[in-house]
Image (cartoon, rainbow, N blue to C red; front, side, top):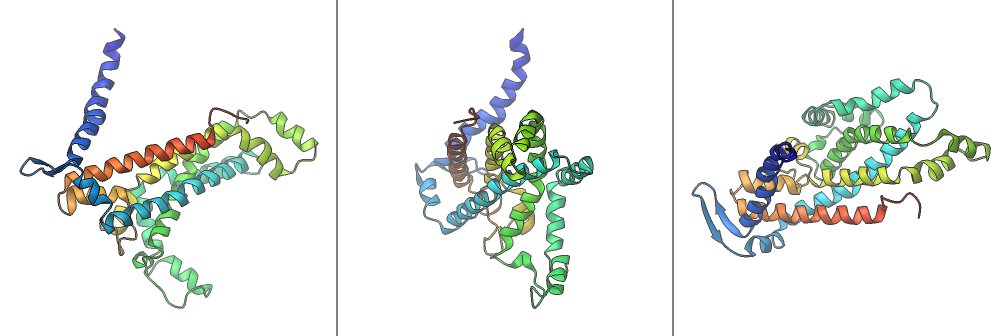
Amino acid sequence: MESSFVAPATVILGVFVYISIVVAIYMSFHEVNLFKWTFDYIGLGNYKRIFSEDRIARAFTNTIRFVAVVAPTQTVLALVIAAVLNSRIKFQKTFRVIYFLPTLTSSTALTMIFMFIFSISGPFNSIASAMNLISEAKNWLNEPKVALSIIMVMNIWSTVPYYMTIYLAALQDIPVSLYEAAEVDGANALQRFMNITVPHMKPITSFVFITGLIGTFQMFDQAYIFSNGSGGPQNSTLTVALMVYQYAFSLQNDMGLASAVAIILAIAIILASLVANKLNKSEKLYS
């Protein structure tokens, strides 16, 4: 009887996850032409191309840079904001609603908003000119040195509220008496945060960081919309996920190479998650 309830989920996972993984691994060892439905075995040819093409190296460099900045930043900001909103400040509920609003907006809409902000006629140029920070207005979307940074800021701003909500829920489990005792002992706000909040939030921090790590490695939609699918300017916003899409559907219809890159990306995500979990020791509150 129980198996009949599990069967639908098993079928869905089997078709859309496990079989897809097996097919992707199979195609990564072949030169694939889906239009002619031909699969020519080339062994490790696709994997050799990954380590020999400059464009693929640039995509991995951009992705690693994106992950290294966004994942830890959004984790730290979410914890700090959650701790502040959980304290005895005025208009606590109002601030919680305001900070959560970006999460309710679609990624596409947020990307379009940031594209307008940093366009040549956007408010960023007006504000920067008024403060004498720039001599002339620029279309920052076409600046290779800052294009990826704009996406980083946008991603942090849109994801922090979600993780902040997770932290807020977890903060309710910390006994208020711990903070009161520390306050009586003369601990200031920073000391209470570092010695009570941070240690008790260690399992949640592990979850938030690993979830953010996986999400940043897979970042696709914002880079696609920002660059109109090209990864420009000068491949500065090209991520691995976007490049997989390009090779599979846009550039050369090279599904074999796209599958090989996707496999390498999956391995990188698994290894990074294992390392992060090991470092965080999520099952232990205290060493």
